[in-house]
Image (cartoon, rainbow, N blue to C red; front, side):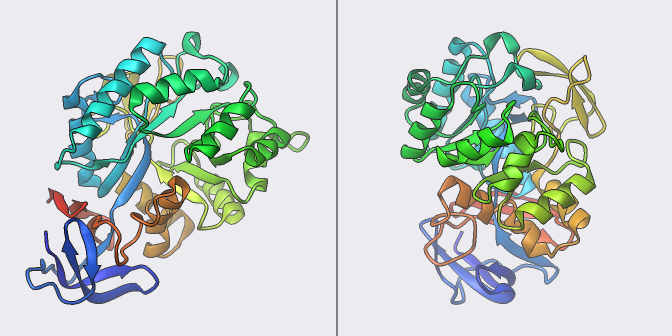
Length: 378
């Protein structure tokens, strides 16, 4: 595409204004009127393309399924949510199964597909987690944090792992230091860490909390727990599943009051049942029963979500009563900053990648553009 002409557009530093944007070779090159730019209805707004840094699957596909078709299916499906960039997220499984998934995602990335949301890299969720807070992860495959084991995974992935969810208290100090030096996000999650351990972890490279509140030691007045530590450390970004099932409205309000608008990253934690009707699906080889907005294992454990990213933004906007642009920042510039890609993605600014979502004021998605390619059109 060449850009947009005389549209409502959310430009970094200016808010929503009437203007144009020109695109060349997948980059934003000017805000002059684009000669061949698309014109839109006046009720539509061009905003930055959304970033989902924690998503397992959608539409009967999962990042652990080792076929190119499955990654492509996820990428194409979530484009309809306004997602322009994502991290396919793995699960705690055997080394062999994780290797197969990493090799597959590596091949997909290196094939440089033009369709669907852009795969920035991989989010390795586990196997370096706590059995006490395993959530829907497979307990028999959990292992302590290990730099050598991570190096193996990273080598298999072709150096495409961009985020690692880990339990810091499970021998995590050395691994967190290593990840920080390599420019990889160390995200504390599925963890029994105390508040003291979280504070220590932040000094050793942890910059993110995986699906905050969920699968971590809660806040208590005699031990502030993982949640309390995350609240206390300003530098830690908090992932948030905004489906109003994993986290209740008041807990979202508390998180926003403590962390502020610049340190929350909306995620979907979506699984293969996303975009599909109620029924029985799979996650890590386990049956997941999906009913309404809830996805649970047979024992009642929440197992990811069916959440769409535009719905997450709408939900949190309404709960917090914040502006449309502030809500959009939670799914764009905040995850971009956390991942260290804010010079390329996360906002509409000169020189950045041409990633856009075209929405109305109610966050219905009409078009998604990734790296200058139209990947979804209603």
